[in-house]
Image 1 (cartoon, rainbow, N blue to C red):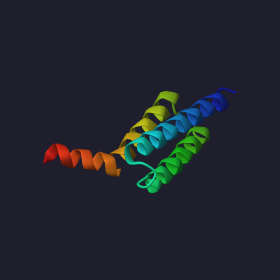
Image 2: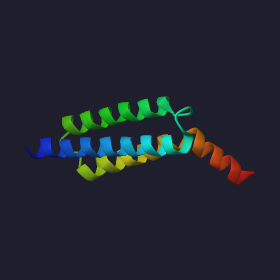
Image 3: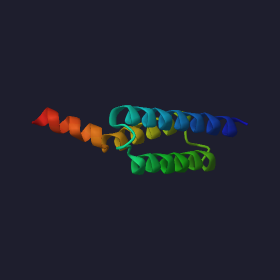
Image 4: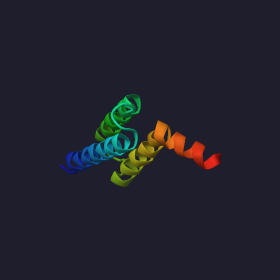
Length: 91
């Protein structure tokens, strides 16, 4: 039961982080420049993280949540609005 509950919590966190990423990118870039590739990578990475948590029950919940949060930040760094902001700051 504990294994299933922690997997459900991780799945919920993955869905919330993916939805937050989608909303932020839509607000920043608009519908015309939405980063579908990065969203796909985020979804695939979330599915992999969830399956690893389900398979290896010795992984702590905080480790898995932290790893996906860092993965989300990494994916967000390589989107067009963030790169344009960095270019503007450097110039």
